[in-house]
Length: 132
Image (tube, rainbow, N blue to C red):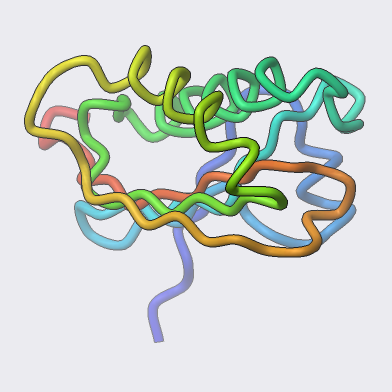
C-alpha cells in the first residue's frame, strides 16, 4: 500500500496532532480535504454563526493553498449543519460570495445534531492543478 501523502496548512498543526488526522490527503491529482470548521486560532468555535461559516471557508482556503490548489479547483462539496432550516440563508449568502461564477462544484448539505461545539463544517474533494 502506498503511504498517505498528507497536506497541512501553515499553523494549526497542534489541532491535527491532538485529534490524529490530516488536514487533507493527496491521492494522484485529487485532494481529499477533511472537514473544516469555523474555529479561531486557538481552535475554539467562533460564536457568531456567519463569521463561523466565513472562517470555515478561510480554513479551507489555507488547506487548498498548502496543496497548490484553490477554491476554483473544488469538484465536490459536503457541508454539515446543526440547524439547516434556520442557518441555510446565512450559509447560502457566504457560499454565493465564495463561488461567484459557473460552473459551480457539486454540493451536498447534511443536517446533523453534533459538530463538537461548531454549527457548520465543510469538506471537499479538489483536483490539484498540474502545475502545483
